[in-house]
Length: 519
Ligand code: FAD
Image (cartoon, rainbow, N blue to C red):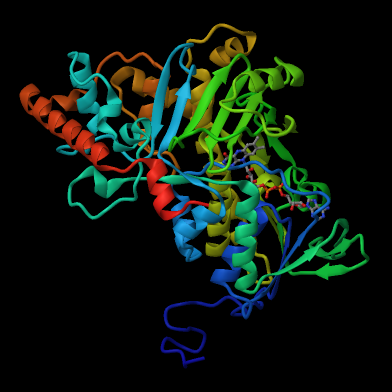
């Protein structure tokens, strides 16, 4: 160490308390090879590399993966860039398509539909949000379709797609997009990246977990074959059962079914559509909702429902009756409990993916939760002391992230005029988290929406869903009177035309895929 300049005990301006480091973690064991396991392995191998630590993933072919999880949000682009993924190769190999947002059908009321686009509406003017000006105009009967101000919404409905280009102020510079992909192919793709970057894989069923007698930390996983795999840091990616975090360490699960009552899904892929819509569709039914995810080789479909209000047979029948193509296989029921682990990280075990929690796929947020779990693990990476400081911070951030997303999802269920079933009666009247209730009161008073701190969904997303779910509004934001009516009108007309021209300029989604990334 360099000599201290500030006295014998100092080191620069830092005052060290004890050892400089207790030693770095040199072996990481990832339990599970679904989307969570392979995303984690690929990211850790890429960022830390095999010279830093041995990265060893265990998965069981006999147990398999959950096999769903095929729609994403634009933040996945950050993850892909971090892994150095060639995007066209990625879409081709996962038989994927591009996604510009989600269409919600029959949510606010039967017969209604709205679009939750990625990106923003228009552009903020004089420091006031665009949607405040839009509300002022819409109240006067002008520009009443908010989709006219989102290139993502317009292009989605026109079946258009391209990546953003450098086009100055044009909306074409701000195209926000994500992907739909085949979950099985995605895990295989990530596995290749992880193994290329130095991660190891062992196939086999874990039958026992050994713990250290003193610390209670996990010491090793024992496989059916008799093999014993030791590690210092364990990452639980074992899916809903939470083999390490739940079954071994006993970390309780916080049950959110009072807010998000759906607890089952029936999945059934069908033949693909003639042309690929660049968006996910979510259609509300009597006791839940149905997803439609268009891929190059098939459509992913599923019906999420609440078992208290609907039987598995009825849910499967509704799904089968509402497919866009001939079914491929038989319906498969998946059970879940919405909520999360009280602590995502316990001792030397971090849970990532379904083992850590699940909030249903309404806004495609689970893969994001995996991504943010990995990013936060890396930025709070432990040494062998597994200090409470790192763990506590990680746990606080992950719980906050989950609660913000939960509030946004609850909004979809609660802010509805649907009264056609006992399920919707429950959702309309259920107690909701206070922070969401406050957001709804603010919107109802002035049409204002806010992003709190670091929350995932921004004010545009909140606005799209509150408007789409038909929350009543008393008045528009008074600050939107800042510009004269004529000036506001002129600027909105200009933005609408720019969006329209940009959508016209974009190629068809099918043509874009055929040219760049057809499977
Ligand atoms: P799994 O896929 O279940 O993987 C668990 C792994 O652990 C497997 O490899 C298994 O073999 C292994 N394992 C378990 N026990 C053992 C053992 N004893 N020994 C060895 N190995 C073991 N997310 C989105 O972002 N977008 C979506 O559109 C979306 N839709 C969804 C729809 C539904 C109905 C559900 C349920 C989830 C959806 N998700 C979605 C979530 C997404 O599917 C998951 O977040 C993602 O697949 C991660 O799952 P996982 O890797 O944690 O678990």
